[in-house]
Amino acid sequence: MAAPSYGLIATFDTTPALYHAAEKVRDAGYKNWDCITPFPVHGLDKAMGLGRSRVPRISLAGGIIGFLTGMSMIWWTGAYDYRLTVGGKPLFSPMFAFPVSYELTILFTAFATIGGMFIVNGLPMHYHPVLKYDQIRRGMDDTFFIVIEARDPRFNLANTKALLEQAGGREIKELEA
Amino acid sequence: MIGAVGLVLSAAGVFLSPDKHGPVMAYLVAVTYWTAIAIGMLMMVFIHHITDSSWSVVIRRQWEHGVAAFKWLALLFLPLLVLAWVKPGFTWPWMDLNHALHGHGTVGTDILYQKKAGFLNLGMFTGMTVAFFAIWVWLSARIRRASFNQDVDGSVAWTLKNRVNAAMGLPLGALTLTFAAIYWVKSLEYHWFSTMYGVWFFANCIRGALCSTVVIMVWLYRRGDLNGILNKNHFHSIGQLMLAFTVFWAYVTFSQYFLIWNANVPEETFWYNLRELNHDGSTNQWWYVGLVILFGHFVVPFCALLSYRFKVTHHIIRRIAFWILTVILIDLCYNILPALKDEHGDSLPFLSINLLWVITSVIGVGGVCIWAYLRSLPTTKLIPIRDPRIGECLTHHE
Image 1 (cartoon, each protein chain N blue to C red):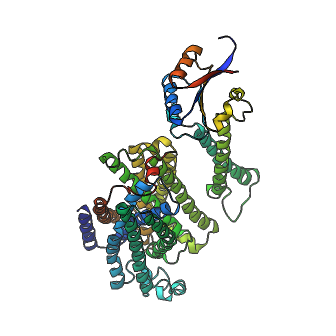
Image 2: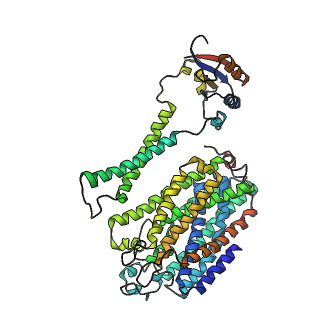
């Protein structure tokens, strides 16, 4: 390859065309690639061979941290740092620490979910190489694209181009990095 | 058939057992249990219509068959009602004004009863119970008729009609199930009060209905009926609801316990004391049952249902469903059976012959309910094929 390029972009006119092309790219074993569609296409994740999101694991971690924060905070303030008997209750009981822990579980889960979603998606992203493609705005209107990145181990300019052509893509262009 | 055997065994229990309270209470547990599941199914149909859902159209048909059990449940409740008239105070102590209270006077001289007498009297109890079943049978007949008629003519009017039924049925259902829980279960200890009680019962109703639905779904899927109709996402959705109502149940049940624990007022705490301690301060079996409920009814299902894989794998979600169905029964036992007391006023233990009568009654009443469901099942199309949202349901996706 001469100049370093970001990858190849191919245009598709209909959802079924894109869907079946995605299946072909998936079956060819590519990993670093994406579809650009003007609207959500149901089942496309499967056609692309995407697994389930990793965000729930981050949410779970957030939830556990929130729960432990609540419990330890109540214990630390009431039973350790400033021992205070309230209403004849024990210095610490999971009973009255529970409402706070439960609220913090929800709060931290929400933070972790939103934060995790940003991290997993690589957001915020102010620039993306496909933005240089002059036709890209049609991807918000009536056209579908498949982008295969050059960093994919299977990427080979000629072969990948042939694959996209064979999958029905037209106007296959190389993207500047 | 199995139901008949169970009922015969339970009846035998009443006659054979030296203390007849046990089998009767066990029977109350069983009737409440299956009624709760039927109420849950009825409420799920209403929720389906009021939210104009599409994913649950196929599953809704199974709920419509499930609510066919109400008229038989009414019949099965009849013995308890007759017993209440023949021997007042036998099941619900407040019905007998001469019933001696432990340590102080009788029900009739008890100011806490006198103040509640306008609500807690035999006439009201009977009238309300008859009204509950009448309303449930009537509402389920309405939603069944509209839905089944739609199979024939495909008119959207039936869907709109059921939406009205749902709008009417939700408040009616909420009120009736709350009062049913108060009359049938909570009034066993009429001194006690909890504003969470109806909500607690509702949570169990819905959880019971969702879990039975999962059992039915897997059964019909494996038999081939719903194979190719139900996809992963249907199981995921119902699993999410199971998780949501697990949290809801825990929230309500914990709130009830926590507020009573925090306020520490004897009028309320005695209810939990009965379920933790004997009069001499030793821990009784109900304390451990309470822990089983805490972990089995919340912690275990909650953690299990967090997993996507568990929710969509048929044999796992079915196992979770059976688990929750079992713990709901234990929860009802926890709420009903400690009303049985020995001469010291201590609750009779959980592990006793009464548990056997619980099992026979549950099989008995359950057999009748399942028979009612199976009798209704072949009378209609397997799925509401002409529901306006059937297409969306069949292609249900995340």
